[in-house]
Image (cartoon, rainbow, N blue to C red):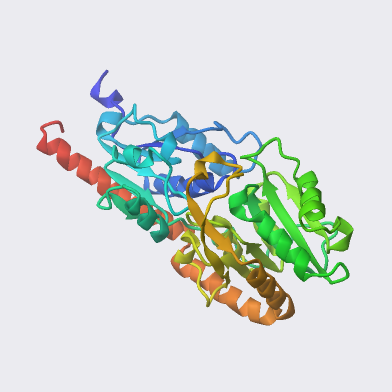
Length: 393
């Protein structure tokens, strides 16, 4: 191989980019920034290998395909992995190795600390994660908080609302992948207990079932209302289920179709939907515990009190959380907040206006992705220095 055919030093980037997960959304912003900066990137897409469902803009799809076809020299490059800690590939290595991950409880799963020890640096999205990872065995000297960002150009107020059949005059929206951690039981209990069937209000649940692809969510909703809350569907205001993925361009329209966003999660590493809702200037009701507190406060959102940090239940739907503890959001306080936002939309709108400003000024995706590009350039400079010192330049 001639010198001109030797792949350059760059970034071997192993991460999910297709399928509209939180991991994928973050990586799209970072990869586009790396491309604009002109840094050599070889993309090793984890999971889905293409945008088969056509969720992404054509230009972004082409850029990702180009990166998948590009090559860098691993021996002179950064090997960057943005995956759950149990999925780190420890059989491959670059000149410098960076692990990017997150977790949502007070702990991390068994084996994660040992996996993290194999990396030069571990990047986490929030102070919450810095604390939990350090407390559970990860060398705090390796930990760096690298926040997530929101594309505030895509997510902005004034979008044409997505049509929502059966929507009433006031609509609460929640967006999540169906699992106990997201608190759907807390949300449904608060909504059903607080609002009467004849009130001009509705609850829109935009969900995916990535972790439970076999789940019939509509049947579960009926079961929970009738068996746990002892009410029928027709005894509460409309609960509108939107199940599945949306094209990226339609997500801001979904937020525009709501009057407030609510998610009584039991734990988040960062909480992307909260940021998307704020960027769209929607009032946000969120749990007062978790990674989202890096960007949510009492001035830009309504925070749900918690009744404590409690052990995860014995009937867990996802085993990865077994033996951990997470927040227990207060149903009663959530009821009060939902009622207050419903009755005082002007006050809620003022908080949302400040929230939009915060997202633009502090958490805009291009700004955050530029920080990632800066860090990659720092690391590449360090790799070059080490190679020169070792006589390998």
